[in-house]
Length: 131
Image (cartoon, rainbow, N blue to C red; front, top):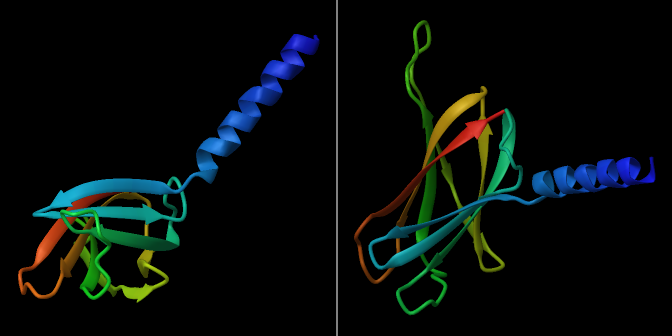
């Protein structure tokens, strides 16, 4: 009986800790590494805070870039495509924005940025499954 209770408690702790960690994705965009994380894992319908850290090829954080997060859901029968954009603000070493995901299902997310002195647009894309 004690083993059963202990194993159930351990499973509960593991389940809670799995949901406590933020959703994080690391992608390459040209010479840059883009680390994007959402505050909820899995992302949920409604407001989700997104944080983006961009590092150059030397591993140094980009602090003076222009960053926007585009998010979309393709058209489905009876529903048009949804496309949104959130401008990210730089504060405390991180670019931050809020994504207002209006429904459950798969969403395409794309971080677009320009890191001076270059004027080249860089992109890092990933998909999230909103619950």
